[in-house]
Image: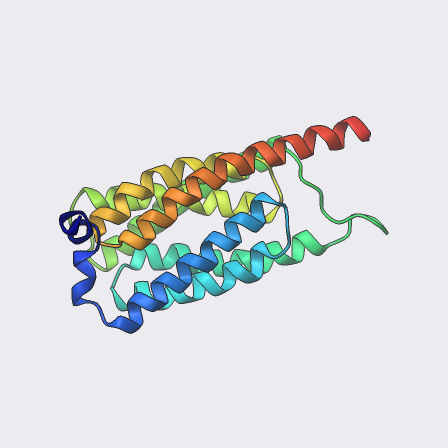
Length: 210
């Protein structure tokens, strides 16, 4: 049992206790945010803001610039999504769950490519192309950027991007030495699958009653 514990958490022995507690706190609020997203609840955004702000601080301290950029973007998009989700499309209804239009799909592709180029430039500037992890980081960052944008617009396709990126992030964060974050992404993957199914059911019911 000790061997398993050491394998999972030995890397934290060199971390300041404050940083470990902060990561755990960020993970808890991150879980809460994804759970509220699954339930189509506006609390997805305030809980997400708390989680991402903590991670921005920690990732900057740990010099993980790519991951910090992701969380900084999450913070900004959470504010945007909070506005979109509360904006009324008429006198009674707020922005509903819907599928992406052709235009939004094109914007998603452009956002994906632009994100790849942006992260590439950032990694070049900070001389961070130090192995395969940087390339995977670039890819997952683009997935997360598009996923967050789609979630902010209440598009059901956001879950597809989250699921793929979360699955990749489980071993990636463990390899980086952040076991709690790795476990967080494992939980995110499970919740995202159920989130997609819940949103799909909600969308079908909405179309049937329209």
